[in-house]
Image (cartoon, rainbow, N blue to C red; front, side, top):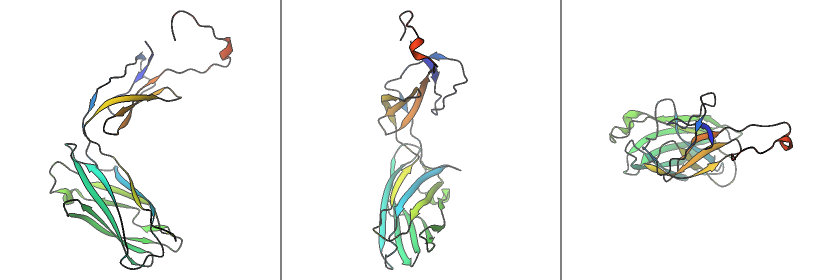
Length: 208
């Protein structure tokens, strides 16, 4: 049996802990995780807003977030140009509820000046009892240069109910589980050693 360190429920591996037999728990169910939380990045955006846009031009992207029950919550990000280097960002729920509207500005070099992060407060999610929030959105990857608008949602930290379907093995021995809900999480790590003279090793016994 191959040995190493099993990860805990959060996917953290303690390589200073005791060595144990490794196993891949196929079919293991992972509970849903709500998007958001205090002090964590709930989602992010990246890409470009066209510096040549005129007042009233709109750029929109969307992302699927999740509540504590694993129910999908469709969220849209809408940028509306309000002048040179200035846009209004509206964060809206699919049911039409506006969760947040804020002004976003860029300097003459196309770099965002404020805000680089924006937070949808927990109170804005009061209409969704299974979604405690808040939602801290990272905007630092958005620029304003000449050229087409390419802004898109680049991630969020929630997921639905899922089960372990397969795994991958990294060069450092890390076993990463691939779940049906798209989650990728460490399951464990093989004990891997390096030798100054590998050719001097000899196979002994029936091990691998």
